[in-house]
Image 1 (cartoon, rainbow, N blue to C red):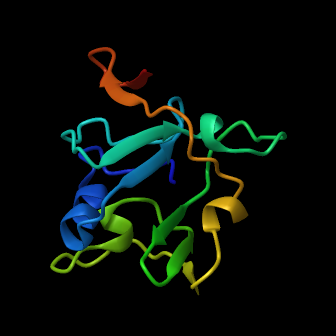
Image 2: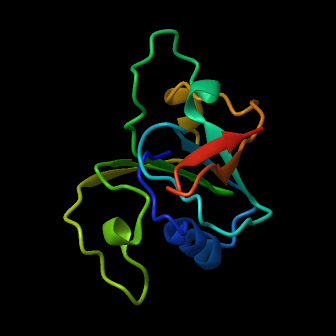
Length: 141
């Protein structure tokens, strides 16, 4: 979950290439931030509107959380901090990060980080779509 992405989804593509996960779910806000709306469709990547998946009753106007949850066979991880979902924030194996970021990595064999962050994953995915010549992203169900 993150409000700011590389427009081509380079960070998501890098995660996909490096770790070959079964599924990547990305939480975004349609009218705030920078979305990966130029990213080529990938069968294991789904986008969700954050207001559809957050269980909390009181919500803020803008989605500014920056968390990555990795669910593994033996351990689950939560990376939380200032880093956006971008190559500038995380870098790659061959490209160094250019931003100064701060994150904390939590690791647990039994913690459900989705539950801890009050995220329900049973909503319908949305598609990112360009709606006008200014390249403003919008969601389509």
